[in-house]
Image (cartoon, rainbow, N blue to C red; front, side, top):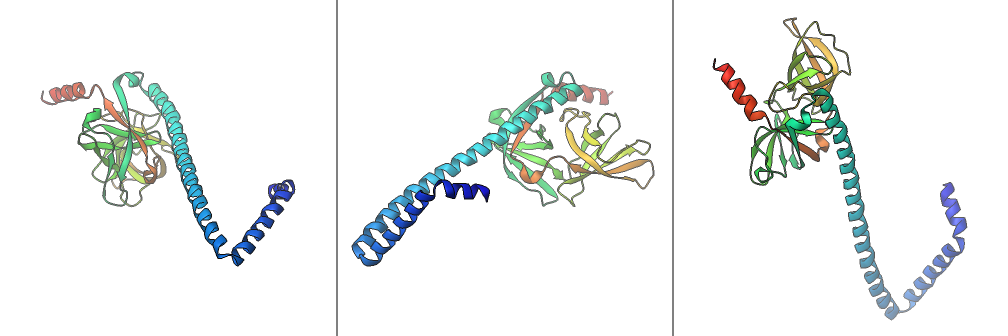
Length: 267
């Protein structure tokens, strides 16, 4: 209100002039059909220019907001990769990150998927991890030359090996299908001290996700029916309703790891 009063005081003569001009125009138009026609044409032309400029400004502001969001995500990604480097000194060497955009997404089904704008032409393959600066997203299920289909964390068929951050106790995470922001973690031994707010991260015990990827935070702890394990209810750090920029993760050692594990299992 104070700023409005300052504006009126500063431009009072200009405001009065505009009001008087408006009154004069109304009087002219009310008494002259010719002037009304000319004024109408001029108004339409002026409106077109205004609408065009307004659209350009809107487009510019939207692009600016998108760029600001992307810059924020890139900054978060630097922190994210720095955290990974602390968890594994070889993370920069062992994994490649490919930026991609989410072009389709679902969250209200039992089996949810995403579609990304990168495919085999960009080097994307099946069974690659998908993450964002705020948490894990899913696993690439299939690819075409220009697109990738991703099985979402919000898919009851997907189970991910996770652990409590700062410990080596690992378990299995699965979406509970009731709330798009919540998952359940099982197989954590009952003697482990778990507190509300503790972070859950990927264990690294697979060839898909790097170790230490943020997943969720604990919001409830209960005992399993057998009494030997805990069941953790956790809130995802990723909001799947607002996914836009993501990163597809390639484990450059995946083939070697799989072949080694297969050889060991056959012994």
